[in-house]
Image (cartoon, rainbow, N blue to C red; front, side, top):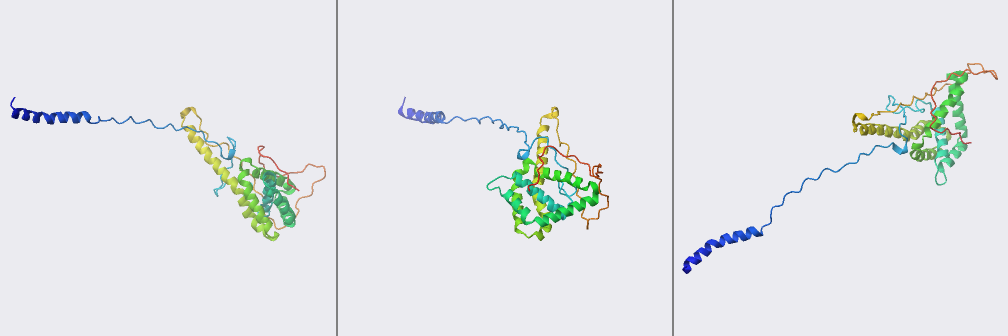
Length: 273
């Protein structure tokens, strides 16, 4: 083959060989990996707040948006006495370093003895004026409800700091300011319980949503039977005028008191003396 022909043929074949060489060195196209399945989200059953029990009954909500408690509609004297009972519960339930709640409570009984005695007498007059000879019995029943209300175990942890704060304020003020401060103090002491009821209601809603995810085989419980509204303490009276004869010793006493159940799931405390 002539030299010129051989050179021309080499030049024609060289690009083809180069392309083949390049093609052999190129990286093969990778296919996209399959889309992984979505992560499995565990279905966790909601639990009651603050360690509360399941299927617990809570109060209904009143027209003011707050849960109905035995502290609603109280007079200043009754508010002060309910504050005293709340601090009594704190003295028995709030344990810690030096147990400040107990120390405060005993100091309050000493420092404000006269003011507390006057408030107690005023509340007695209110009940006697409203219910006659059954007034003191009616008050004892409501006192039990109030003690049980403030002794609700799941709320103790959040209630105790508030009780200690309120107790410190009461010790720092003169006795003639107690009645004016009592409604504010009572609202502060009740707030942890209002917050708990709201948290429990939210738990019930979340529980219903969780149950509904399992279809018709699960009964959705919207709410347990609500607690009946506790009685409202009587209004303030200007003075005590006994309008009913004193009961005869040994005779049955006509007790005219509101009917309401006492829940046995809470402990009743005896005032510290």
